[in-house]
Length: 458
Ligand SMILES: Nc1ncnc2c1ncn2[C@@H]1O[C@H](COP(=O)(O)OP(=O)(O)OP(=O)(O)O)[C@@H](O)[C@H]1O
Image (tube, rainbow, N blue to C red; front, side, top):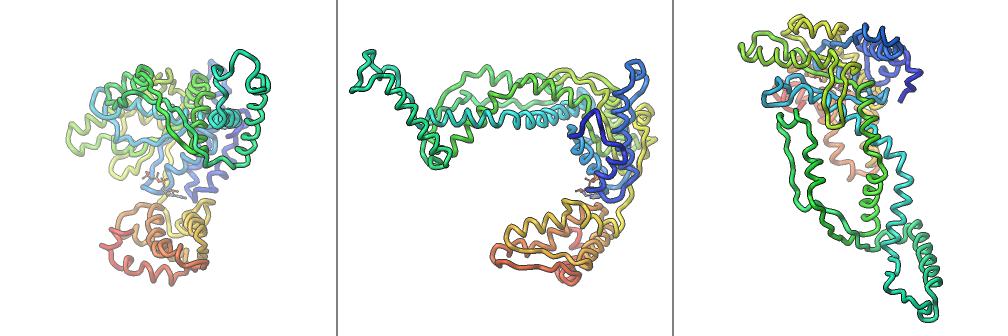
């Protein structure tokens, strides 16, 4: 996460994004400026802040060229909650389906899990200590008070010495526990269970009410205790979850998550071109598409949405809309919505050279992912330059001759290319595979030459 007082400059952001995304400089620059603008806006006077409206981005470009990836990486870079939604999934408020406001509720959920995992890390050590004590209680139960007679003499020992004997035993067990000598020992763990597993499936009406019905029901249901025999290793996991849960301060998590979503949240709205009114599909389809746009407008303009964690203002949330705009044009969007997405960036189709770079440059590139997976089985994958070029060539060719799905084509090709190696790897011992042009052609020539086949397998 970056320090909010010293945020990255647009140049630094672009550099960071370039570690993962090849080309698409205009889009990288646009999101980098938008991020910097958010920080600039936060530093304006209250009076000026009211005047400056946030400027959202519209990314125009074919599928699989990096639109989502740029936004996702930007969010990761800044520790911001991020969600990707598809505009076509929404229907107008009041109709069956998901209402547009639910995107903000989903964003807050994403923020909750970010805040939760950082808070979890804070309570880990305490939880581990508490779990150890609870395991010891199970392994060395204290003598029940009834077993200690009021008279001080018990077989020659008084209660005091019995207590210190217990303490000594506990410490002995603690040492054994820490040395991992008791992992398979069985303990009896009492678990709380809801008496009736009622599940609430929300439909849109309930979603709008946004009441935590499941949570309410869970609280109302009487709890039943059941006990299970588990090994120490298994019980530790269960107890750890219980202790972490009890140490987490839910109210603080919710407050911080709402703030995080409001101040840093990013919503990527894909397929925005599909809710443009184009006349396709008849008048009623157009009316419904306009309805979605109308519902979207207040959210991107800045409104307050009721969520189960409280009210969330959308004023500072960054919205990035995207679409291929093959048929519709940005000017087919409602004028008010067009005005809310004034920053337009075009993403370029990927060339064969881009595909080569995508295969090798990003730190988590698809070629590296496959190599690392197979290395676990002792197989070393060595990609030669001509091998990489052959993969990119094939991806480019199939994209041209069938459907252009951009860099996603590389994933299907790599799967097919290394399918046999992946299957055989555990049985062939230590081995090096050279992925050369010949290797690629040998394995994929049939698919390359048969358009129908490539439609199915690549
Ligand atoms: N320019 C690029 N550099 C590196 N990887 C890329 C690039 N473009 C696409 N990819 C990879 O291809 C995959 C799909 O890209 P992405 O999800 O960004 O597509 P998109 O442009 O948002 O398309 P869609 O609108 O269909 O979702 C991702 O795994 C991404 O890593």
